[in-house]
Length: 115
Length: 110
Image (cartoon, rainbow over all chains, first blue to last red; front, side, top):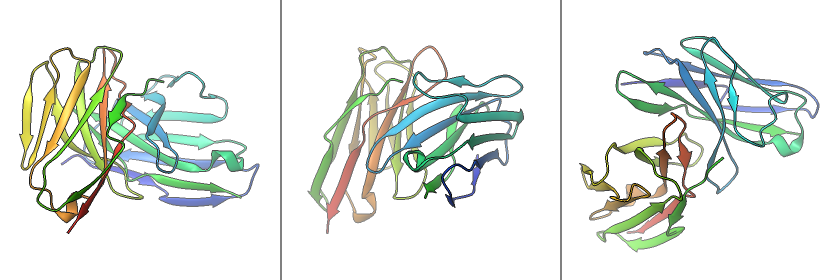
């Protein structure tokens, strides 16, 4: 079946530094990937739509200069949290659109802690 | 972004009981998905629904796409301990973005 690999699964960084999270579709090509953010015991909030070869589309209220998204190939999208602060600590999850199965497969998530 | 209203927020049931939860939206959706999420993991797709009125089963799980296209329902029959987790609905309209419900936390008491 369709597999999406997300890396790292857990990262701790110092306030003011940047962190890059990778999302890879392992056995299918994904022209579109999505990035979500989830706070403890809350739902997934869509942050942005990542489009291969073009700029990401951000949801209202999401700072595009803080959350940089790059979708340089059909199997890889990256989310970079720039100048991270403690309030950016959260669970970040990506999903990829699998057109073959018309499904949306999720990665296993990245827990970011900013200290 | 949009967020869908999901109820109930949490459920505590005895093993063997049936479970029902629903999701409503202020917008019309073309696709409804139901996911289960275990702690620290990404959501796993349970059932996908593509047209109004559609009723689809996956083992003990049954989901329906409401005829108004603004709601969806998930039922779990004869619950077992491994059904424990958080269940999310997700809906998509004319675009390909999916928006998630607020989640239903299910606890099954053996």
